[in-house]
View 1 (cartoon, helix red, strand yellow):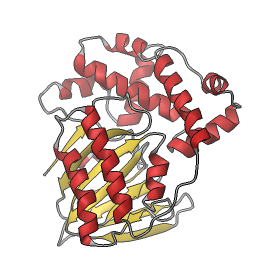
View 2 (cartoon, one colour):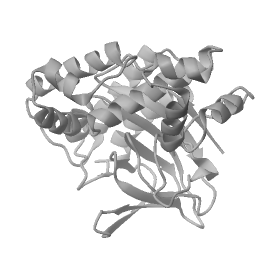
View 3 (cartoon, rainbow, N blue to C red):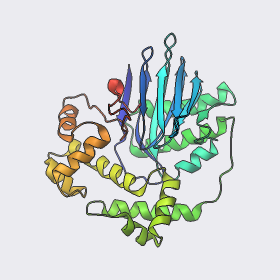
Length: 304
C-alpha cells in the first residue's frame, strides 16, 4: 500500500522535486539492484529494512535501518533495498535535484561515503519527518508550496542530523549553473549540444562538464534528457498532441528517436504510458532509472 506523485513543474533550478510518496512495504519487498538519475531520499517511519550500496568494483556496503533513520541514493549509484521479512518497513521518499542539492545534503552531513541519516534524537527527527510527510500527502498543493516544504525539510534534516558540516562558498559555481540551466530551459526545444551551453557560460566543455556533474550530480546531457522527458510527460498529460509533435516540441528529430530515449529512461513506450495514464490510474514513472539486470523493478517501480 502506498501513494506516489510526479511533481508537476520544472520551473525550479535551485531545488526541484521530481516525484514523491510513501509506501507500506510487504515483507521482503525490494528494489534493485538499480541506478537513479536523480537524488532519492527515504525516511523510515516504522519497521525495519536494509539498503546495500554496490561500488563499480563490486564491493558491497550494507546498512540496517529502523524508524526515524533514512538513506540517500546519489545519481548513478548501484543500490538495492528491501523490507525485513518479519517487520517490513514503512517509508516516505522524495526524489529531487537542482543546483542547491549538494549544499543541502552537505549541511545535513550526507555524502556518498556517509549516506545514512541518523538523528540526534527522536524529537529532532520528527520535525524533518513532518515536512516530508506533508510533501508526500499533499499532491494537490501548489508547486511553490511543495518546494517551500522541501526547503523546510532540508533545514530540519540538517538540524536533526547527528553529523553536520559547514558549507563552503560556491557562489561562482552556482552562478554558472544558474546560467546553464536557464539556457537549457530556453533552448531545449531545438538541437542543443553541451559545447554550446559551455560556450554560453564562458567555460571550456571539459571544465563545464566537470562543474555541472559536481553541482547537480548529473552530466549536462543527462540533465538535458531528463528535462526534455519531463516536458514530454507534461505534454502527454495536458494535450492531445501526437507523439511526433511532442518529439518536435522537446527538441528530438523524430518520434522514433523520442520513443527510444523515453523507453530507455523509463522502461515503457510513451504511447503505452500515455494510455495507462489516461486510464485513471495516473501511473507515474519511476525515476529515469535503469535496472542493471535489464528489468524494471516494477513490483513497484514507484520511484521507491
